[in-house]
Image (cartoon, rainbow, N blue to C red):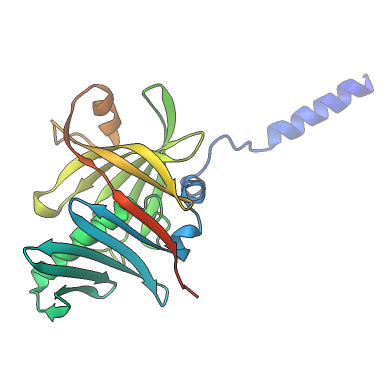
Length: 250
């Protein structure tokens, strides 16, 4: 047998014996998405922005996030401060007592706005579980579809919520998000990102916020409803006056 043919056959056998990786894992997709969207800048900066006549600030102290919301109510300045141990409310710099139920409600509200503002940062938190669902095609583009769930421990009050992200297969940026929530009667939402911009190296987007006409549809199938025009536009989520400044986080 010709020597070249023998070498070719050997190389083919070796190639067939190797497992060829044709797809990224959910973890690799999230890692790449965080890197392209801001990377370490999420942990080294102080953030502030305005949303619906309120101001939001995210700082860090001793490695922990401090989430703030500042509101003007009549002539009063209301500051809500959300940390790992709960929420405190200050009115004109004076601490006021809140019932636990109200503190939890306000805390979840503050956390939700900050959570969406910095996505995909946060998808590598310890309580996050990731599952790759495959590829989808939306408006002529291909996306990696990744499901996010949370452990009960350290997963927050909304640990049983389910999220699905559609990451552009080329850029790994999340362009669509669907989620199922259970507070305030529960429901499902679908968000379409638009108005992408980078502020000091950190990616920010606004969202068109939709809800399904049929609330029984699985959250993993919301992209199909979007393509079929079976979602109702509820609102637009717009962040304004964004600032990203270096923080002293040693």
